[in-house]
Amino acid sequence: ARLLDVSVDDGTGAASIYDADIVSDASNADDGDEEMFVDRMTPAGKKTFGITMSVVSGVFYGLNFDPPEYVMDHVAGSPQNSLDYVFSHFLGIFLTSFTLLLVYAVAKGNRPSVFPEIIVPGAASGIMWACAQSMWFVANQDLEFVVAFPLITTGPGIVGALWGVFVFGEITGKRNFALLAVAIALSFV
Image (cartoon, rainbow, N blue to C red; front, side, top):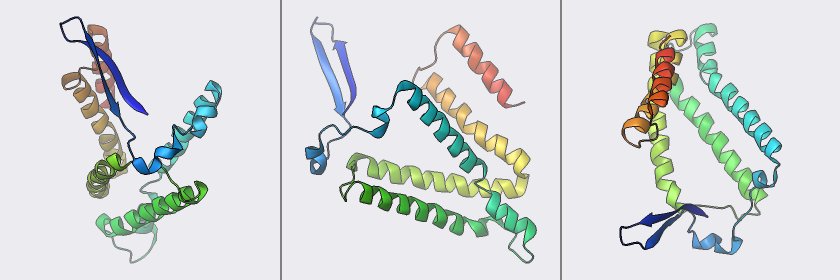
């Protein structure tokens, strides 16, 4: 599978090709270019599947802090420090992920597709997420949901958009800058 195929004029008139393989795991080389189930869907099916997965993700995301908040609010004698619930929260996430991995491995006949290039970056992003999630527990405790949730959910999007402007140059043109400014301003409303 190719991540990028680009022809570049190096000034000599000759074009060179740069490409980056994102799958180079020799242990799965005999699989060839494995077709994903989404590749077999019609465009309308892909759209429906994408929207459904977005809604499911949004529901899980929205219910993320409800169990510990419910316990703190309704169970007499329960700890009121939100960090007391981080371990059980993360353990639930880990066990769910591990169970899904086992189901996937069984479904693939004990030959899951593994991409070693993403293991370390995936672990690093998981550690960063865990730190951010822990601080979100603190923010919910100190600021309450109605303040913490909008701040924490819009802040990273704004930072990402600004990275897109200043670091990656993804957003260009006066009209797009104006739309971005309006979107950021609406985030603060």
